[in-house]
Image 1 (cartoon, one colour):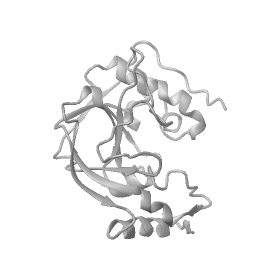
Image 2 (tube, helix red, strand yellow):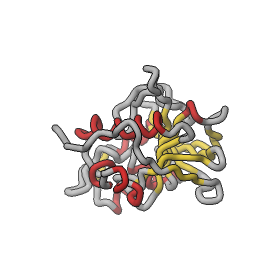
Image 3 (cartoon, helix red, strand yellow):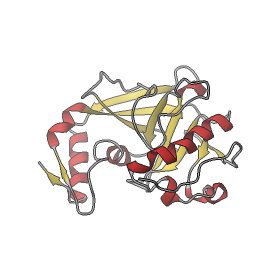
Length: 213
């Protein structure tokens, strides 16, 4: 599939912005232990297949990335329910919750990011539909924009955008190489298979009319 998204030039007018702890006191990150012994502070080091990662530092090594959302519901939509169709609603295997955990984290304050929010996309010749709203088949065309943002904006510590699955929330993809040590501070980790987070996920499933199996 070709999505016809034009590719970034060597010098793009990216917009740098900041987010402070006063604006978002706590970020939420869902991690899965089904295939790997993932921890709440594990950064992806070149693995995965997402809209903005994996990407290269420019020297051949991968950027270490970590996704976080400003609400638990967005974190669930971007992870646990990411592959489930919403129209018509698909089905969710509740037993899969045994592998998922929700981490509450704080980030460096302030944090500088390249903004892929809607107001700043036209200057890049892009629309939200192209960069954020396209299906996974377009990831090979959206990913170069994340790589260009990292390589061209040396002060950037992350990419900021609105979630495709839940545009009421903010998302960040952190660049570990640009963050202080430790890059994040984990406040709390909770399993999604048990209360109270289990009820939150299942309430969201019911609200979206997704069938439980």
